[in-house]
Image (cartoon, rainbow, N blue to C red; front, side, top):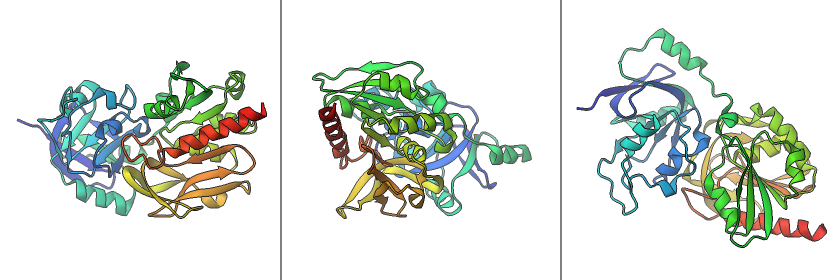
Length: 362
């Protein structure tokens, strides 16, 4: 018999559901993702550090658990909310079910509640904190703790601890990837384009990176408030003046903008899902992208030598920046798109072209 579980929102609203996954109470920032597929990538994406993730699609887990689809070997989220989870998955690659996966990873889940209603609340009031618990009573201490909960040290907790190397089968370029909570498919996209990849911890100095003599520097995605990473921003400021081509994705995009003097802001409820429209300003084309972020670069704060290249099709926020004085560009969305569409994977080719030009000058 399933156990009753309760989702308590920061504003005091309580939803009753059923427990699945690990049975333990948890507290985190409540966010929703609109992706219809890719739940395994969501569960293993470091960008969800400190958050309780709600899936808007009503049935999750129908193709089971497939380890080769994981974006990292760990899970960073605090809790998982679904309308219904599939107890009998069907896929020839499946190696288990969602409930067992969450139990093994120590992630509490809650199902059987009105995820549509919860999403509407978040859209109206903005991102708020929440708690998964097993009693319907909500104490003043719980509400006070929810108001005070803040995600801190997110990059420090998700970056790798030591340098790692991933060679390409036919190597032409040497790329250093700064890991702020990187998804594996960024490395796969670079490897298949002939890039030997050296992944370094987020606190690696500019001097250490430049001593490796890279042809390009990749700035990964990651969790948390970009402005908290003051030491990383200082090192990126040095790297941006080195002349080495740079490509930033998601958090890497935000950190590069901060290093160049721009500002970032927290969005009302963020952009998370595999169906987010982005408009390329130069061509007028609209791409469907995969996204996972709660902060954005403030377009009006960009320096004169930075140009907004992409904007969000729903709220017109900054989705990409090209720099005119240095060989660098960045995007807020995920061109490696796991899970999601591959419409913008050509951006990795643009990065390779920049490295070709850089090598000609050496």
